[in-house]
Structures are given as C-alpha cells and as structure tokens.
Amino acid sequence: MEKASLREAYGRTLIELGRENKDIVVLDADLSGSTKTKMFAREFPERFFNMGIAEQDMIGTAAGLAAAGKIPFASTFAIFATGRAWEQIRQSVAYAGLNVKIVASHGGITVGDDGGSHQAIEDVGLMRILPNMTVIVPADAIEMAQVIRTIAYSHGPVYVRGSRIDFPVIYKDKNYQFQIGKGDILREGNDLTIVAMGLMVHFALEAASILSLEGIEARVINMSSVKPIDKELIIDSARKTGVILTVEEHLTIGGLGSAVCEVVAEDYPVLVRRMGIKDRFGISGKPDKLLSYFHLTPKDIAEEAKQVLNGKPRLLRAIG
Figure 1: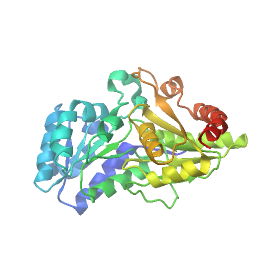
Figure 2: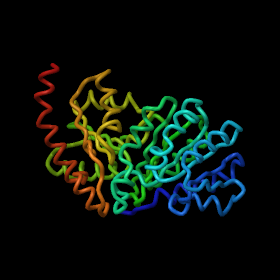
Figure 3: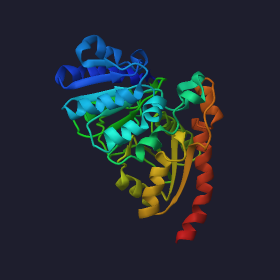
Figure 4: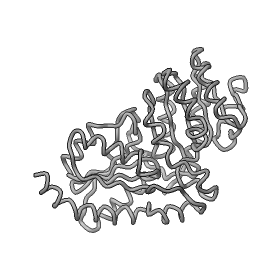
C-alpha cells in the first residue's frame, strides 16, 4: 500500500494557497521543520512568523491577524496546539468566531517514542466542545490537501488534526471531494457500520476485508468531519445496519465515538461500540507496537466487530 505524508501535503498546499491569496499568513511555534510550514516560510518569508516556543502567543497573534482581515494558519504539535493554548483558542478565537485555522501535526499515539507526554489523545475532544469550532481529521494525504484548500476559502475557526507518520493512500484515483459536514462511504455492507477517522479509516477497510472472508459485510465510513458531523449519514447507517462500531486513535471519551453516540441517542438509538484508547495516557514505543498494544489493528477491529454483532440480535429484540 502506497503511503504519503499528511505534513508534506499540508506544506505543499500552503504554498499553492500563498500564491493564490496574499492574505494567507502562517505561524509556527518553533517546529516548522516538523510541521512542514518551513516550505511556506522559504517562499513567503514576509508572511511567515516563527513565534518561538510560545503557543499561547502564537494563537493570540493569529487571532489579531484574523481580526485584521488575514487568513492565519497556526501550526505546532497537537499536544501543544490544543493543550497549552486552549484558553487562548477559547477566548480569542472560538468565542470571537475569528477566521483562524489551527493545523496540528503529531496527533494520536503514533507519535511513538516521544511517549505519553507528547501523544495528543484528547485533542479532538478539547476542540469539539468549543462553540464555533470546526474539527477535521483527514484520512490520507490527498484528503489533507483538499481539507486545507477548503478551509482556506471558508470562514471561521477550524482545527485540523494531522499525524507524524505517513498514512496509506486511500483516495488516489477516486472521484472524491472533501466537504465540511459530510462523511464518505468507502465500502458498502448490511451487517454493521464501522465509522472511523484518520489512520483508522484504512484499518477499518482492512478489517472489513477480513470480515468479508467470514461472510460479514461491513459498511465503512470515513468521518473526517467530526464537527459538524454528518448526522444524516449516521442515522441512515443505523437504520440499514442496526449497529455501529466507531474506531479512533483518540480517547473513547470525547472524540468521534462520543459524537456518533450523541447523534444516535437523540435520533435513532442503536448499539454503538467505541474503539480507541480507554481512559488512560499513552506510553513510549514504536507506532506499530503501540497500535497493537492498544488493540487498534485491523485484526482487533474485525474481532470487535464480531463481538458487537453477537449483541446485535438481543438489542434489536429489546428495541422492537
């Protein structure tokens, strides 16, 4: 499977946007080599601001630039972007509804050897609860480029979560265009629905292939737009398959699984099982080892899906 870097896709798209629109400005917190905003800095040094290791100042400055009519993209690692600067994001960006784009790299446990202190596993939850904030987690580098281009031409605060590691390419040679608030059905099936974001979308597709060998057909949805979420697609899937499994490289509390549960609980109650990291911090290790340790491999997803299906008839009887 071909892999590609979401960070490189971000850097290349910023350059394209910078050539199209002189109001595009980029800020970084001394990590531009890792976030790839250095690509923009080399071409447009007059529109790039290295704020140093001062994430709060970066967000406050981005808010000021947005208030002055600029379109700021502010980047650093996800743990610092959402944790260290949360109050500035709430007060100066979300509360004011300013046009600031926060694009964070190094989300999830696949940060790897840097350990639990650097693994942002609660960032989606922290951003999702903020009024006015749009939250997006792309599934591959192609979608990342589309996301960055889309948010550059839409108004309002946005959080985009990227990754340190390269992701398998899903959307090559597919007629797909990212839309805020829309999920994408990547595989049809009638037995259950698997809703995933980020790297887990590819793993969900692999899990669906494993399940198919056993006669189980899973509908797989890329829910990159976590907020606003595609309620219509979730309810349609609940009606068609009667059971949903969510998968995320994030805490099961507050992230994608919680968002899906909120939708079905209010509009069409069905059994939802959430896969992710369960109320604990990450640990140091190689990304593939960590994914196995936290039971987030395609094989784990397939096994969980079969367990969910075992509970499906009982639940359907209970709700009539």
